[in-house]
Image 1 (spheres, rainbow, N blue to C red):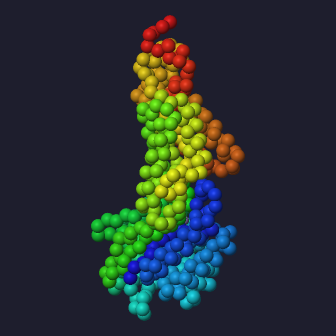
Image 2: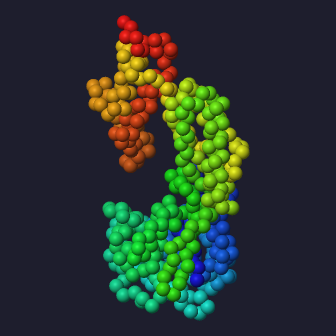
Image 3: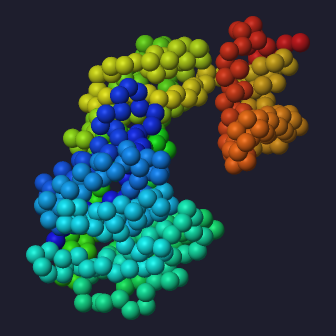
Length: 436
Ligand SMILES: [Mn+2]
């Protein structure tokens, strides 16, 4: 029997930061595509690892599509088995009562945080078992495995099913120990909670799968998103294989502008790169993929004024039709292009270019000169001020701007190099000659 594995649907949500109509990009849309796939591929059971519904306030948006999909699956004798996550611990038990009938064939396992083992049958014969645990409350700060059942029947393969935070000690969302998961007598673990897909397998231990949200929902969740298919044999459950289903893919793209001579050459280089990215995304994303959302970084040393680069970036962000394999939307750009500079030469001067060049050289070499210390303290203060203002405005003590010492140093180098490149050529006359 082939089984379909998924989690973190978050029905009620849709992909964020996508321009225009959200049709096709809603979690409800990917759920319909999941159901289509399960029927097309003759799947025996659909297993879902929690956070099916985004929040109780999405109840009305979520329940229609959920019931419809369950009915379409049930009509093909496909059962759906799920556990609850931290987002739907309060909504799912009610829905499970409603959808337990033959018309929906929906089973919620492990209610109230009590492990439950459930047989999955096909044609009247039990093929494998699912052992699952549901979130009993909004948060849960202990490892659910502490209460894992001691005696599981071992005549058939078992799939473990739980929503929680893998190897994140101190997490409020069911911290799971990877070592403990691998020590359990199951064929594999279907996990939920982390939206980026990740499959991990070690010889002699059950595989661990975070299927990821089938629809990419947030720019932080890069890569191909979809569902996973595994085969249940009499003795095992094979390593799951991803089937891409998301209509949106988020990606970070870094383009090097080294030796680009003018704005037109930069446009060509960016267009070629985005075309290549779109083609790669299309090949990995299958027929469902409609849109590639790109966060673009452009770096390198080029004899282009910063404002010329900024101008091209703005054109890209506003472009509606890029001639690519799938539609590309440039969501965000970061201009890190610096002018090619003779820093050593400039550093011999006494005026501003000389001072800035010495600062850049010290920062790049990791030397803690007096100037470096002063600039770093100023920058650190500015970051702290931003954090303070954000906390006051949002009343949220968690919204701090995390900036490591290294990231701060890199930002200062960027800023100083950009400033150097924007100085008038008269400043450059200060270079090298040691003029008074
Ligand atoms: Mn969750």
